[in-house]
Image (cartoon, rainbow, N blue to C red; front, side, top):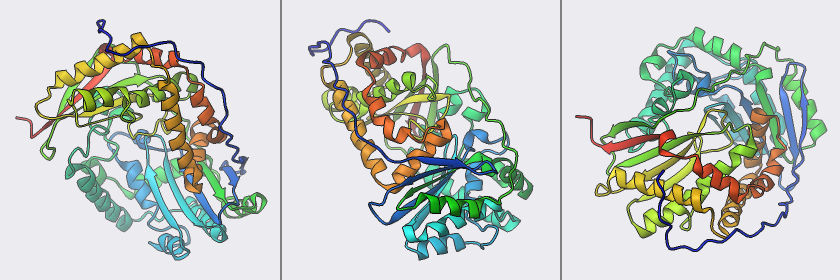
Length: 448
C-alpha cells in the first residue's frame, strides 16, 4: 500500500490494559467410551433444563468430488428414522416433552442437538444413540430429502437476493483445492445422482462413535449421566475413524478478482477476503478476530464510521472470520471477510480504495486510546450472553473439544481475547494488502 495521510484524529500510545479476569468457571468433566466416543459433561443446576449435543467430525470439506452438498444432505437423512424409531418419531418424542431440536452442517463438522427438561435427559441420550447406531437409509428417504434440500437451496439461495453472496460465491475464487472451493450447499446434478450406497458408506465412514463428541450441559448429575451414556452409547460398534486430512493450500501470491451476477439484488456489493493464520494457533489467530471487529462492529468501528456515517458511500458493512461467520468453528485454511453493500452511484474502486486507506491507517498509525478495550468488551459481552444458555454453552464446548480438544476454552476465551495486544492487531492489519486479497464484485442483473 502507498502511504495515506492521517485523518483528523490524534493518537497516543494505548494505555496499559488491566488484566482482570472474567470469572467464568463452568465445570468440565470428560471421558471416552471404549468405542471411541468422547464425552463432555458440564453440570449447571440453575434451571431444570439440559442441552444434549453431538458433533461429528465431518463437514462440507469432507465431501468427495461429484458429491457436493452430500454432508448437508446426510444431515437431513439423520432425521428420517433410526434403529428403533420411524420417520418423524425423533421430533415427536422431543417436542412431546417440551423440547426443541435441530442440526446443521458446517465447513468442518455436522451437529445435532436437543434442549429438554432435565427430567428427559435420558430420553435425549437414547434418541442420539439410536441414530448413531443405525440410520434409516432407504431409497424413499433419500429421494425425499434430495427434494427437500433442493427446495431449501431454491428458497435460501436461488430465489433470495444475495443468497449465495459471499459464502458460496467467493470460495472458488479464494481457494484452488476442491475441498475448500466447492459449493457446500450442493449442485443439483450431484444431489440427484446420490445413491443409497453412497449414503451407507458415508455413515459408516464418518458417523462412527470415535468420530464424534457428545456434550451434555445443564441440570444433571454427572455420574448418573455418564451411566446413561455408557448404557445407550457403549454398545454401538466401534469402527475405524478416518484420518483427519489437512486442507491447507498455498497462500495466494497476487490479488484475485472475479465478478458474480444476481438478478434479484437491488444494489451492488463487494466482498474482500484474506487468508489468515491457522485457527489452531490462537495466539496468531485471535488478533485477526479482534481486527474484524475493530473494522466493522458498531458505529464507532473504523469502516462503519468512515463509509456509513462520514462518506455515506456504503449501506452496510460487516466483517468476520470464516465463511459462515463463526471465527472458532473452522480449521485451516480460513479467510477474514469484509462484506460491503453500496449504492449504484458508489463505484467499486471507491469502496476498495476506502477500505485500503483504513487498513493502511490502522497498520501505520495503530489503535486509538480505548479502541481495543471497547472492542474486546463488546466481543466478550456478546460471548457471555451466548454461553449463558445451556445450548450456547453446549455449542461452544462441543466446538472447542471437537476442533481443539479443549472444552475448557469456554471459560478461557474471554481472557484470551483480553490478552490480545494493540500491537498484534496492528500487525494483523498490515498483512491485509491488495496483493494478498481476493475481491469478489456482485453486480445486479445477469451477465451479458
